[in-house]
Length: 596
Image (cartoon, rainbow, N blue to C red; front, side):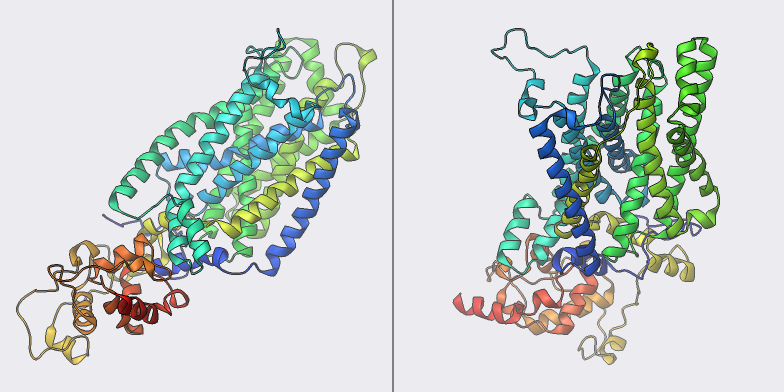
């Protein structure tokens, strides 16, 4: 497979990373202890979440009257939050599915966290309609099942019911997509695990992943199928959410531009939230070499483009209202810009239309601080967009006698802050228990987009093997102490138990393995019986397969390995247990050998 990439492209993995470095860096947040930054953010999120739980209990026990709703504004803060959270969940599927189909390499370091964000966002969105029912324990009434209430049945002509099916389908496909992508990462944690309980848990989560070629083939096939299923969902879910408004006859809602307008806004706000999370996460869990300035800049470009699309949609709404000649429609938009909620409208325009345009300047879109600020500003603006659409269209209807204002109560505000806290609690726990970067996928682009290999190509050209090649000269190797031979050999003969061709080894590495096997013992399949190497700490199916590939099948061989041998295996495989995991292999192998 060619690893060529145009020199003009900046590296997506920095810091001179090897395959083993990727494994260690991705596993560190899971295997190590949480740092001070993580505990500070988690504590704040947990306090906000508990406040939200208190507001939910108060709402359910007191009634929806605890919110700021009234007869005129029957939808307000709750539906605003619902649409906002659903929109944020769009970016995960877009990054995972659409960018996968377009083979975009830059998605690989950020897709796992974006997928997790999708799951957690949809969970937050689903809370609001259930709470808004007033009697959440009767939520099952939304399910079309036979019941004893006679005429109680769902109205399948209502977009509100379409929402139930669309969002539940979206959540299901996103969850399967996310989990299937995690299988190689779970297997990596399983193989590195020292504690038996941890090894057992990640073994269950990895569904028996062994790293065989057949596993990878099925992995790629399933991922492509799920990407094909998920791509229409990116368009359909927020389209159906927009139908909640567009199918009504209320001025300001009754417009055909809502579906594409809502989808563009969802991608816009979703990418902004991913940007916010990535900038925080790269600092908290030390992933600056994987979530690079290049990733931040590409995310900013998407934010700038979708922000421009949203701006065009705002202008189109105004033009259509003017061109329609319908005075009610014209007043709805005039009221937004000049009425009592004018501040919300212009805050929306400033945050969503004007602020992303500064991304045209490379210095700003490559600035971490500027990117973080703008991502938060965009999320604020998109929340106000939903607020403006919902509240300003309802608070002044056809009857001036019904005109009124909406003001949120402390319960409204507490519920919203509680969902933000709940979201970050879930995300931070995810970052401590699941690999936050798809290490297996990052490794596939390491030779094409890693700065180490890009530098090698710049120095030596594009037509060479991008590792330190050495022509086999047995005498020179013997002089250097690599192998012990009396004289040069004209035969290219190596140990039969070593799968050298599949590993792509250099001649020196083949010689080094031969020397190691002559020292620790050679496995003869005709006489010897292979031992179960998975009884060693940190050895799972993948590591055992690696050991077999270099001719190590027996406990006796493992017991004779030296630190120099371990360093050789690390250089060959990259993803190999570290010193802290393999430190007791020799003694443990001796015990198991003696038991046999």
